[in-house]
Image (cartoon, rainbow, N blue to C red; front, side, top):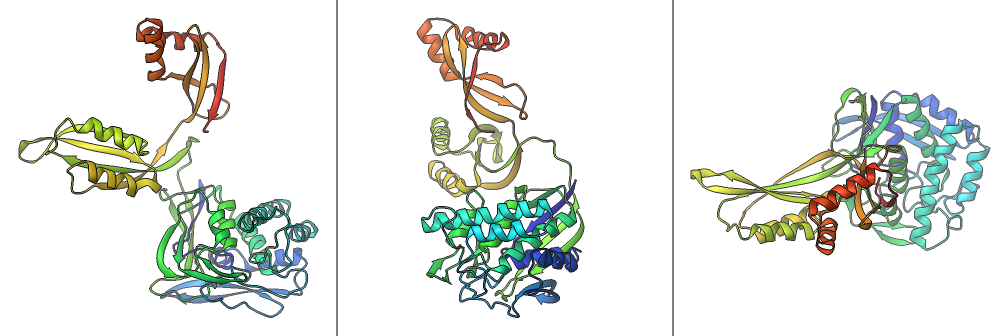
Length: 428
């Protein structure tokens, strides 16, 4: 499968995205055609040059509006014009007056490819919704003072057209890295990540690194979440072309670059995937009475699963290998619990990808009543498979005075006979 991999190891912004695409072979002239389609060729100029960031060669693309290239603001990313903290005075495209309605009008009147126009609209809808949430305003009434400048529109449209030119079957990215501290924005000092950026990246792992200032801009975040099919640390890729797009700032101790790689990756099975962290430790000096308590505590604390495996340790001593499966965001919490509740002095930690079935909760009509059940299937459109819940079956068996197996068998019989199944909580 032809894949575009984006690695925002020093953040991501609109101009870094454009530089990466040009470095990967997207013609700068294609992007200039998008500027002309927007009707901005008299006001906007695109230039590209080779630069060095920490000894690495990269492409720097500048969006020059009315002859000016925006300079980095104090504490800001310095990645893009129209980024956090910038305000322009350009008529019709000023950051202070670029409302969602105005941006929508510019896109609708442009002679863009339909798919480019549609995707650009999605990017700016995300930006508008994030800004509206941050400022407590209704969508459509917030002024995109940080992302609505002409250069941001050019960044978005050219990035989308550039990705389409590469024609990947899927786009994936590694988790973005951002800096720390504060930025000076139009309304004063704001924390890093910028509030709108943080909203855009909800549900996505953000790695904070020891670089002062903003590395991920709102435009970069919106492009990342709109154009990628998956953000993950685990992937297989055979590289064919590699490109680097440069930001404006020289970062201390690291290249201010976005890396893009085009290559072939194994075709997906179509099964949903997610990423988990596996915590493991082996212990040979704890009483067996402790372990049921430890497993109970881990599951109550949010571990997706936890179990024990008997092992033979050094000097022939019998021991226990404890394994816990946790969400990436809860690794430290669960690790601390294991270190507190057991005698272990350390844990093995590894990230891994899971292929999972779609899951849901439901209720099934049986002769014992409308019973809660677990449901699973491989993909949309398939029939749900019913899995009896042990605790439910146990309660029914005690209440009705029947063997536990009989309750299980009744649930299986009810499904096979076409009993009414109600899907209550579809997690797929």
